Length: 159
Image (cartoon, rainbow, N blue to C red; front, side):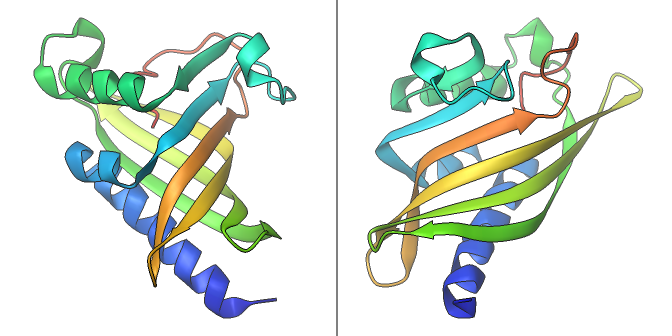
């Protein structure tokens, strides 16, 4: 196990979660490779995201629009803005191809909005591209909610 690689990728992923929990959306957008995809599939088993229904299948333009909607205050579904805490754990390097690394982990997202708590638990897979000497960019992030085929609410911020 390459612990240096795992530590570097883990620090990046934890920083991403912290940015999202503190609504640092502009900084979060900068973490992405320009061709990166953010995907939340409905079918937890699918691998063909382009030809199946997804809660999100966002390229750079759609990520920017999602952030604008979250930050604008104009969307009823995101107001008042939820307060969130993400716990990201059990990170594991699945593949190291030199220029990209695939990491899988668990995410437990708790939110508080309108006097109520919600919980979204997911298996998450990040494909990270090396960027410069010590940095990363997100090439893809696939959030497989464990209850994705059930009736869901408050998904506006599950980034």
